[in-house]
Image (cartoon, rainbow over all chains, first blue to last red; front, side, top):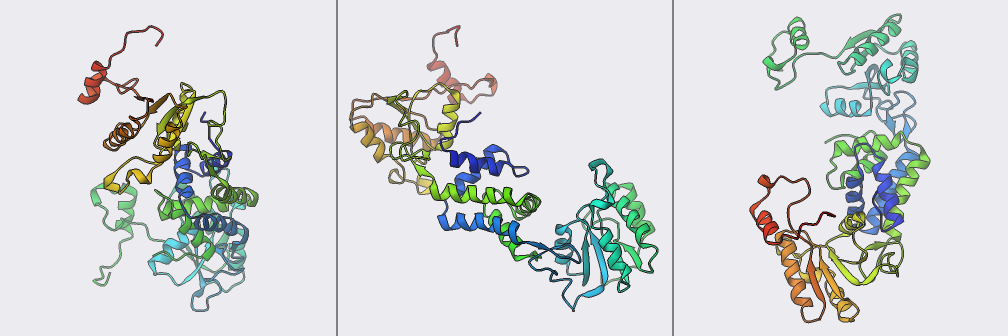
Length: 204
Length: 204
């Protein structure tokens, strides 16, 4: 049990140590770093966190994080509003946006179905997806969840929920990743990459 | 270059990513963690950092971090105010306090002399140490710096600065550490541990 020379210091270290993956030694290092910074810079740091938590919104259509009621993507007429890409979380939206290969909209589930972690369909933004599709303006739903047991379970659940509507349901391609070595690729992935082979195209 | 769906999010992630050892992916993970916490908890986190930076003081005697002008150790009559243990930083004070083997006071230099990093004696709290000793109430100065090139240089510099006064100057023992294996201990340390051997004492 360490004795801190200052209660202010102890409280700040304790707060940092609550963050995931940050132990008390790292917390101490971070706090002492902040102590060496300008007062204004530290105020900006603290305020940015408080303001984020107080003011951030979630888009009422796709549940992505947003500064406005409707996010930039859902309110953008130049995006294809008839296509929905279903993802697990906000980072996945950012990762797909970074590819610049997708011009439709998103739907952030906020997780995947995982009975082991006590996460069922009602804990996710699934009902609002079903309602978006039921309005009849959606032509395609792309399932872009991670290829894990939980992701596959969720894909299957969504497929059943959406199959009554006339929407086209697709799933992102699975195969060997760029720069992966064939001999080290698992059997399921390698088998699938042969079954789902595409015509050779010099432009790819 | 990632496109953030919210400026509030981007600013908070940028602020976290300024911390040492925290990249943008870790920063994002930490910020999304905070977004899932209670508003009150996040406000407490932000305020603890801002308050620390705004209100923390450094003891005018020993330069340790403190909530008051004079720290708890320098103002404690039950500590031996005639002994000063010279350390590099605040963490070293905490480490020595945790041993419960020392009842004197400290002097936090704020670093060690390191010409490579452009740190000279005038960048450290050396003059105030010389003045503390010059007042005549100090009987012993214990040099407790790390056994590195820079630590040894600083030890030597302090020794020359303080040798005019009649104060006793000691240095913490160097030898093999608890649970270290002899065969893997470096020659300098092992040689010193033989030269500076102490009488065997069953109470140790």
